[in-house]
Length: 394
Image (cartoon, rainbow, N blue to C red; front, side, top):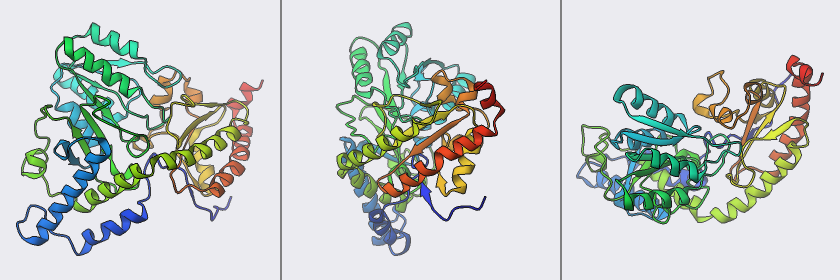
C-alpha cells in the first residue's frame, strides 16, 4: 500500500508542535540574546531577566509565587527530584502512574528500603478517596502521596482537590505528609490552583502544551525542603546546577501563558471534536473506551479493539498519514501490553489492541473526518487477518 500524502497528527499527549507565538518569542534567544544567564554583563543579564519573566508567568498560571518554581529538563526529571528528595520512608501512589514515578518508587524500594503502597484505579481509571484514606491510616508514617493529575494514556483526571484536602486534614492531626502530583498532561489543559488544591509539589513539561522539548519545572511549596538535585553550580538558587536552557524556559513561559489564557474556549472546541470521534468509533463492533468518559481530558480518547494488535493498527494508520499511538511515548519500544490498561482490569489480548487519540487546538475537522474514514476499514482488514478475531466470532 502506498503511503498517503496526508499528514494528520493525533499524538499530542506525546508531544506538541510549538505555537506560532512561542516560535516568534523564542527566536531572539537562539541567535541574538544568547548570553549565559550567570554572566554579569548585559547580554547575560538579559537572559537572566527572561528566565525570571518565565518564572513569573508560570507562577501566575499555577497561583503560586515565583520563588516556588524551579526549572528542570522536563517532567521526568521533576518527578525524580520530588520523589527521590522527599526523604519519605513510606510512599502512596497509584498502579498506573507514569514510569517516571513508578520506576523511581521501585528503585527506592530496592535500594533504600522505602515502602510503597499502590492504590488501584478500577475500570474507570480513577482512584477512590476512601482507598487513600485507608492507606494513610494503615501507614501513618507515610511521608509522600504522589498521584498524577491526568493519566498520559487514557486521559482520566484524578480527584486532585479532594486528595489535597484529605492530606491537609491528615496533617493537622498526624506527622507531615507531602502531596506531589505529576501534572505533565494536565497543565495547559485543565485549570490548576496549587493553593486551593493543597498541592505541595507539581511536575510539568513545556512540550506538552506547545512549548519546547527539554524544559520543564517543579513547583515546590514554600516550607517544603528539598535537597539540591544537581550539584556544581548556583543555578536555580543552588538546587539544580548547569547553564539554563534559556530558549526552552522562555518558550515554557510564553506557552503556559497562552494555554491558560484561552483554556475555556479551547476545551469547548476540543470536547465537540472528542464527542464526534467517540460517537463514530464506538459504532465499530467490540470496541471499548478505556477510562471514564466524562472525567477525562478534553483532547484524549483511548479505545481498545478486540481481535487486533495495536502495533499493526498504528502502522496502517501511518500509511494513511495519521500519527497516533497505543500508549505512552516513553514505552513505545516495549512489546508488553500497557500497564495502564492492565491496571483497569483489561486482559492482555484486549490491552494489546489499543489506540490513543490525542488532539490539540490545531486539530481540524477535516483531519478528524480523514481518521473516521480510514479507521473502520483498517480495523476490519486487520480482524479479517486475525486468528484471535476468528476465535472471538466462533
